Image (cartoon, rainbow, N blue to C red; front, side):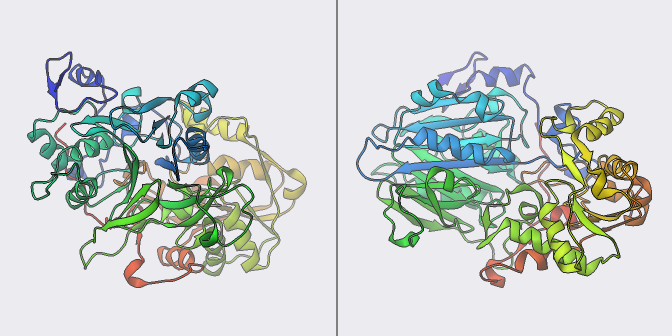
Length: 549
């Protein structure tokens, strides 16, 4: 055991060992949630950091890659992981990290982590130092711990059997009981991150598991999954293997890809020789690294990836009376349009949301447009279903930062004007149906409407391709408190008056579920289901425990 500066002993040393003392000094922020006060007083970590956010903030992205055949590989694993994380940058912009292994020794990993965007963290020198035949990576937006270097992932812990690296997307609903269980074993925790908690949970073997021939990592992972039902997608690396893990509710996405030869073309994926395997939160980055989408990791599935390929080593079932609970806002908001979920491209699901919205809330207007780029796919769907022409009415300035950095509502609204310009010739004298994917606080849509009216629009009707957001999320998404969500203050008619729209309507919850199932390759009631907690308040795993720290 290693002794920290504060005099406490830990069973496993992490790559951020100094944070134990930082926590004692009070320099590490706590996750602030108060289920007893639900639903009116839920404090999320984003408020603790003092940020001024106009909408939902994304979660995290995980990525893993392993080469096939003899080592050392000719594949540049570190560069592949870096490019994979770039494709997942929309899921988190606070920090990122990559851990690689040569696959020969369980003692040492190569690690590089930092704060900021991936392009600022990884340069040629950093990539060259990340030598390895396999590795995992992570891009982060904090939901359960402060945005600080000590919380950068992947986490590396040193166990009796060698180094173990883990990257996590999601948020543990029952982290309090799991934290107590780990601490009662005498294990020290150096951060408040759920991901370190998971890593430390895997360091000890279950009592009923024999490990005479070495650690049984699948059994350890299974034991953790029985203790923590959701929410997580994990990539876990030990020596020469990577384990891809998805919670039994399938709440967070995770998919598998095959690295093929550059000249493989469009041949059947089954017939192509694998040069390696990748696992990712989304499939959107596969083509850019020469990988082909294979399938999703199933809910509760533990996949082992090695130089010989991949295999399912276990499946942890959820209770029979519980349905799958895939986050429906992956379709609405979070995922990149070219990613694949449930056998369909996200773009096609968003297109169907627009079609369904046109059926539920038709209008007599001159044209349909979108708030770029969030509402564009749904706007095309609305236009096709309604028979109205689609035209761009807003020009986006891509060199203006996100509006949450502004310190006041007044400056934030000015930020919207800097972010968009109106295409006056498309707008003047027109009755416009403007589509967006969601409304959270309602701060930005009003200035956009004013911008269009100033450009000559005679009518501006707002249509939202998702239901009203009314509840916070406890499973890895930073959604503001109930009192900050505009849908809890104003109904659709009141909100239209508030923002200066001629009318405003949302897609229904039933309509959203119908839309995302429209193009699915198969609809199996047993293997299908969505988490709509932020829309309905029905949480698949119940409310989280109150934290004692």
